[in-house]
Length: 478
Length: 101
Image (cartoon, rainbow over all chains, first blue to last red; front, side, top):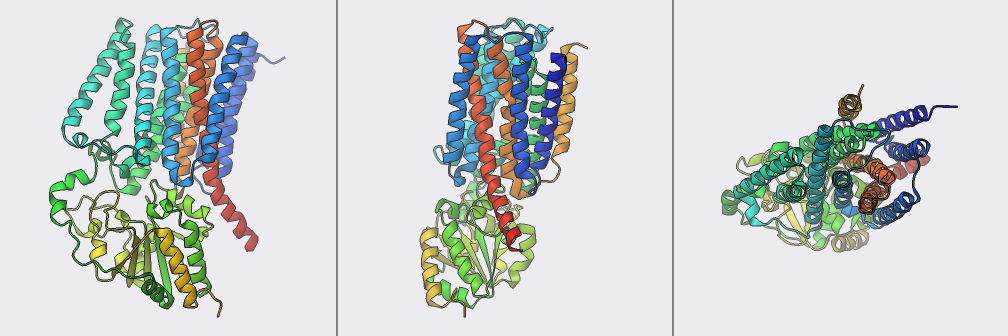
């Protein structure tokens, strides 16, 4: 008969293999879905392995089983419910919520072990110091992950705005003193075995203090970083309970999350340091930005005029933004573009790397509305095409089409890659009002002579546009 | 080798593996990848389960462990399902096109 230990190792190794294949596959469009399932299987396998191991080496008491089942049922049920119910537009905040809970879990485990030391038979951690260090790391990182993720979620949901005091230099002072408190608490935990709750509270506060000043536009990067942290917390928890598989998994996610964060920063042309310590983008510009925040040359036009221009166009580019998603207008947009296409108008969609609230978010939303994947063009691909474009429809996007990022050295947006829509012959901006974009910065595009504003809710405007286009004979096969 | 030495090696190799796994990611996949990686970080279910199994008769520890397990499973199951929902939209598209051409 096979030695139980060998079975355990085999299962663990298979799980690690599947996990790495999963992460690898997730970074390619073709394999992503299978890879996700693979990773899911890997986790399930790891759990099965753990049960087999503990069943063979010791007994699982009925009491433990009851608590396992109740915890698993509640968590699993809520997980399924959330995953099924949440709208596609709210994906980023959902990921943040899940992530926070992962951090919370690592924190609780470390807390539990720290208060009620378990007599670990079988896998024992020989060195008390190492155990305490892992507990400290697990609690510290887990708490930051949890509170940071919850703040990130609240900000993305719009439940929380950025308080003004967090934009002053004062916040660094606050955060530094919290860090010092954490250090003191950790040291006292290591040497005198107290200060546990001080550490928990201080780490929670640190998560809040660090995340709160960061503007919504940078949130994706923060969530990605927190995701990496939750991996670190998991790895630390692995040290606490003596599970190598957990250490590998946590370390992998931690490292991969870091790379992903880096990739995302590059896509948004922001450095990680400036995201974490720079506060909101707009804050740096208060003085300069205020001077030229007035619009001088706004042209507004009716849906009818817009339809007439589109009818005469040969090449139309749609620039979708979060506003489109909020108005749930993807499906109406699809009908409009279908009409255009059947009249021989060439339609494509310009997807800015951070369109929506998170990189790739917009692709998901448009895919939901049945828009062909090949028509979605990335920024670098479509930018050279704008001079040859007749009509650009900007739908609920703002900062990503702001020419300031190219022309105005003083602008806080300067240097951010943008879509060069102003090079097109005509630009229609469909927008609810003149409010500023997510960064709170004035958009020079609206002032340009070839830009016309069509005011209204994206869904309603598109609906009207469809009617107007049909009246003009667009969409009827001639 | 003691557990600690082994564990440190595992940590090192795991981190290196993680660094290597993701090279170039198309922006389309940033959100799903993040969500998937997030689900994987819920592997801390293992920690929660180990805690529960070893808790013995200590009531408070069982309660803490159960909460930890709930949070972790919320992360894992929700994370994988939500990632799948996102990715399903891409693959549905591809099937249709495959059918057409």
